[in-house]
Length: 381
Image 1 (tube, one colour):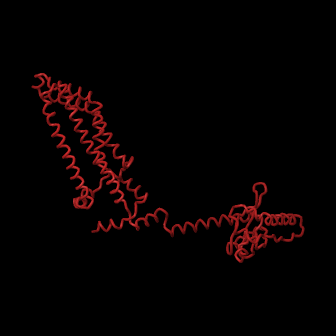
Image 2 (cartoon, rainbow, N blue to C red):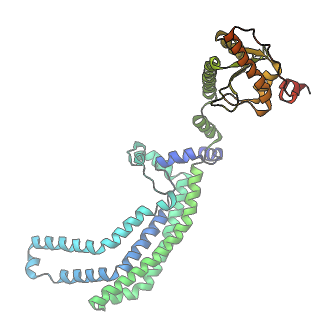
Image 3 (tube, rainbow, N blue to C red):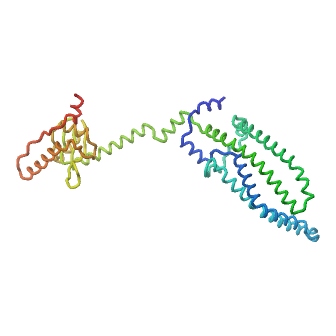
């Protein structure tokens, strides 16, 4: 009942993070039937391609084994030496087939899971030795399905093998009456034919097993909504942490902005609600840039810093509001405000010249601003 309830709750597709963690643990989709079919087909192909070499090697091995001198048969030490030599020769004759089969066993799982290596999967886990846990896996719904599949595959493979042996029985019985060279070649033909039929059966079983393994893996990897939420929090950061990070970033940005105010040429104010600090260097800038801007308390801080460093301040409410609404921090003023800001910068330059010469300060300008650029006027309209 618990397993059924858990399966019902896990209605969400697995996230990439969950799949990646499972892969790191060695938990990837696998099809034993596909691997068995690949190994069998590879071994058959190698057997057919090296048939002549293997036939000659085994004919020579049988000849030499039956041609041992009588003196060698009487000495147990000679028999052991001969047995080792014959075993080595037999292994070397079958080495191509064994090597190709081993390579297929390594490459076949990559068809489903790609290249994977997990040191965690090789580690010792004590729970694997728990008999109760093992019985739980056997009698779980997944274990019963695997048991049913195994019985079905055994039945199919057994039926095919039985039919094949029944059909090939006359050929096997005639092998003893054939010459050595022909008998070995005929035996290899029978083995290759039997293996080909078995490989075809395994390929069919593998083709049926692969979709099931992919479906079963995707089902096991499913997540509940709560797991997705927790993973999202871990990946994207918890809301309170993200809020704190944004606060720190805003504080740092404000601090950097305030450090730029003493380098400004002028501060345009509302005069109480808005403040925008401008700087212009005709050698490096196409148009004046906004080095600081703020409203209410931030505007008061900008004005205070400007006053402390002797930065001129101009009360031009429409222009201050338009600059604040249409510019970005560190960006240039828009072309629609060039004329108005040019009046302000001309006043600043004349103010500096008057201060240097001891003349009277020029009259502050009141630049005209298109009402559409003033957020206050545009809102009222």
